Length: 181
Image (cartoon, rainbow, N blue to C red; front, side, top):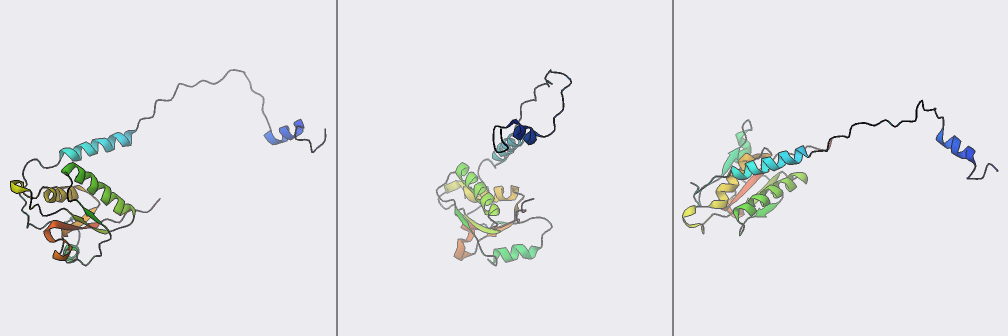
């Protein structure tokens, strides 16, 4: 055999490097690992059910012309004033017209998560004024108010200027998403 022969056992021995002799020929057997549990997923599922059950039941006290406004504790009131005046550029919009409450909830959550993931800090949600909601009052408007207050990533929100939907829409200021690592 020559040094160029790929079947030469010396190539194999040089490739594996140094070896040590085993003291015995029995395999080391360990107890099987416990099955992996998706704790985070279960936690997320429980949180989703808690959120679902936390929605206000029955008629809302909100009227079609009522303004929405919220400012996270500790923030400068000037932020809310500037938001209400439309001083922040809306980077995306979601229209909830025609959706049932359960569909709207999912749409709002997905919209806000996507907005933050893409670095959008100010968005608008059109919830409608509830003029066709009869005696119930504006259902989606009240629910949007409730959902937004529950989210830690919402810094502030305020009813939009008339040109952007007035009391049938809301501007939302989001917390900046943390970068990777």
